[in-house]
Length: 184
View 1: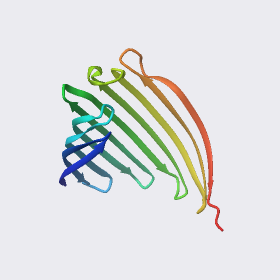
View 2: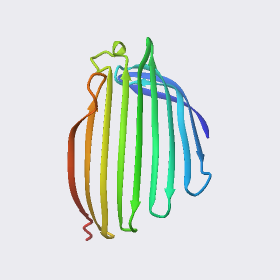
View 3: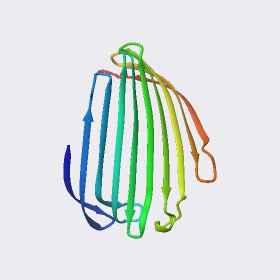
View 4: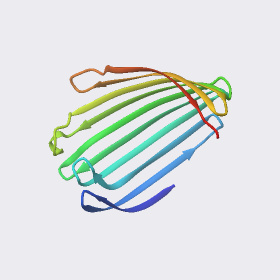
């Protein structure tokens, strides 16, 4: 699909007239494989510095359904923002997500996300790091006791790095959550 999208964005007291061209493609060659590609090009706003910008976005995704119990998706998001003077930043976000269903009431999920952003520091109105790298992972176990009650247990962590420091874990969290719907 394709659509041309004229936008009027209002930010910080100024109206920006932006023409965007968006596209999307879905392809499912079988019941087990699905491919998607979405993206767009055109005008936008550099919200960090309150000025006109042009962007390129691409987002491919591949989904796999392996049997009745296991599904996985690998996706990537790419964005490049240009302003007067050159490229402001290039951002890449990759994600792998897998879910295994033991039954209709119980599943485990794993997510890993990697973010890599490179910036042109000279084009920012305030100090920013030249690059940022982040790694996020999460593991979740979910069990639905009944229609109103769910138990969740999991683990997540974050890691950061830049051009001079390797990606290093900054925090980790173990959690347990019980949800219950109170009905009158």
